[in-house]
Amino acid sequence: MGQLQLVGDDEARCVHCGKRAAGPCASCHQPVCGDCCTLTDGGTRTWAICLACDARGGRSLAPAWRGLLVWLGVILVALAVVVGALTWLSGR
Ligand SMILES: [Zn+2]
Ligand SMILES: [Zn+2]
Image 1 (cartoon, rainbow, N blue to C red):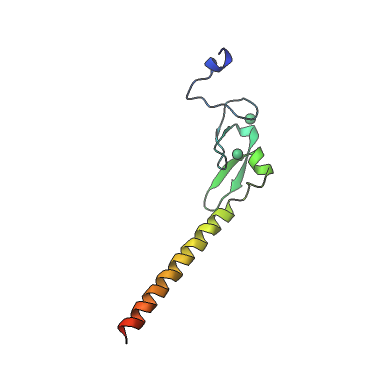
Image 2: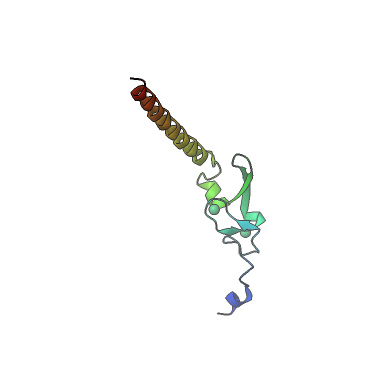
């Protein structure tokens, strides 16, 4: 009650300092203000992540992308094996 009612639903507050949030953290999705976030490169676009995520190593989003690429590679190899097996079976 009281203070909480002053904050509108559309006005997110920074979880660290209570100022008006500039946007959600790309890692933990908590609202953070411009002072409490840091910009980081996550491949094709720039992400804003909070200082807490930055401190625990959330700065680099590359491992997630690498995991996705590994999965794509596994799927492609599996498809190649299936196609190769079918080709071998039909060629007999
Ligand atoms: Zn803040
Ligand atoms: Zn965060």
